[in-house]
Image 1 (cartoon, one colour):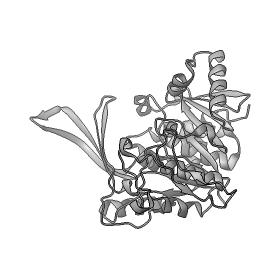
Image 2 (tube, rainbow, N blue to C red; image 1 turned 60 degrees about the vertical axis):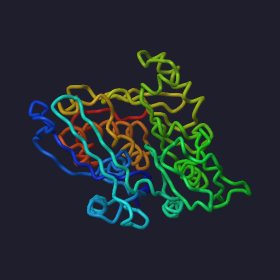
Image 3 (tube, one colour; image 1 turned 90 degrees about the horizontal axis):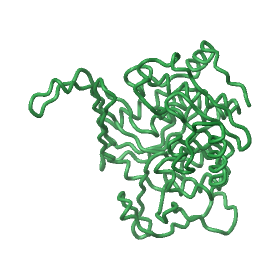
Length: 362
């Protein structure tokens, strides 16, 4: 039986349109083509888990409207187990619009809609399935509760109530209560979900970014995989990863700040460094192997983490899993459309074999 991966986060129906800025007449700009598809870091992560053969539980929010039902059917057809809570008509499904042209520039416009209505009951329900790994939300996830329970949270961070939410850990580990706060002292659904994972002894996979960095990661036991970009690592440690000495020093510093079994540093769109606290290995896909379309991106695709987590749970080889993540990112961007082209495990294996990429351990 495949290991179960839990992803928690937002869902959007995305209208993606290619435009030609030279064909602008007044306030009207003509486009060549358009498509509709899922959008968002969480959606891409869930699809990467499922397409690489994993058992993915996706806790997200969809409204009972045309876009919500289309997304629900799409996820199910991708063998993703969807948990949306009640699909209400009170809100609209999240909507995003992406406009891009032949240059490297693209613009995204997002309306969160029903994504602003997560509750802690949604989290309680999905953790009852006892996943093997929980991917910490990679984006802002807002939750609401009844005001008389003093758990009402607004979507504007500046207006979040600075209170402590007290819940009993399930199963109870002690008489202590869990504080579902982030590192700023704000109530946080992500913090609540992390504490639920910890209480169930479920491993955490974290992408360190502007959202997850607000969580008290240094206090969390059970982080198995921490993914961080070289830019974020430089901001944290002051080192550029331009030499072996700098790499070792920067990785040693992050180890002291956040405890994790493995660390993966993303560098550009084709390189990663894997570190286990003592050893590290550089993973690089030569530019000659990278499809031309992928060259437009300077960073890894959102599918990276999902592919890493799923392969690691199956192979227990973090080096191979990291190669899987890099190749998944490259192949996802190999053709126009991006998220519609998330590769399967077989396609990734074929790429690795054809290009004789080393997936051996240290």
